[in-house]
Length: 343
Ligand code: AHR
Image (cartoon, rainbow, N blue to C red; front, side, top):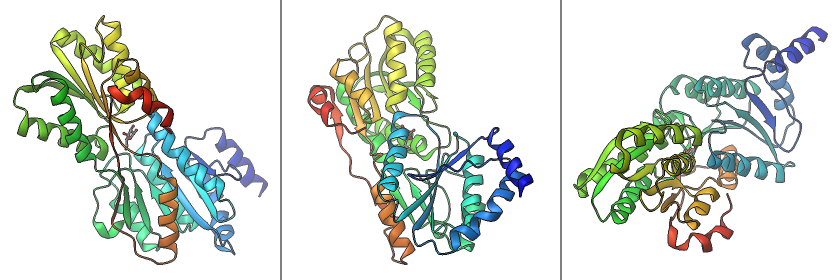
């Protein structure tokens, strides 16, 4: 036992992903395979014996954006408010699919009631979802989709990313008077949020706005730093030919706004902006006249998520897609909207 404790302690210092029992104790779990097996060997017995709570494992992508932090906070806050009935095991996968898969495998070994995750990319989930299914544990996809057979997950809670992309294109066309050259900052390569926001946007431009040209489209990985870096390179290549920038999230747009200003141009005026999410930072930029439009994507999914988990534990059926209701916000009303933003 002493040896086991020691190896857990050693491993904790090399920890790559963290599991947190929300609102309760913190339980760091290493991604180093041998020690992980030792630690988890004890966990299932504890979980299975007389735990009346709803035990949920959630494998979060990481902390790439303000939106993601808001989603994490929403899930952890709700669990923290309901510690008498909910036991949340939370894993931060640090943007790596392999870490999300390791977390899911750990949750299966623990014997949790439901597993939730926001899949960092769309593909590569079949094997681990099948393991969960074989163990009788429902999978709930939260905010991002996975390309798997429908029988491998119970429900998807989240937005219509294609619709968001389409709405962003319509907004861009309106801002540009239906003509001009633009650039596109894409999200994480392979993520449903990036694939679908691109499809929705590009298809709408191709179908209905022939005088808008997408000069270039590159990934900014949903982060502010990458968004700035890629925008700097777009500005070097195309300079003042760029009349608009579409970013798959607000964080990348906030980075792009910095790059535009540093290039001596006025974001929101010389270069129109349309992005997705609706985080406070973009409302501040809109209120300051430095951004034009954000298409909302709701990260406050905590309550819906746990309600769904409760139903699944009780054996109830749930809709295959629990769709978020969202709006479009523009510069004109940003100052008034700002005080009401929750994330
Ligand atoms: O999956 C939703 C996207 O992921 C959000 O738009 C983005 O900000 C996040 O990181």
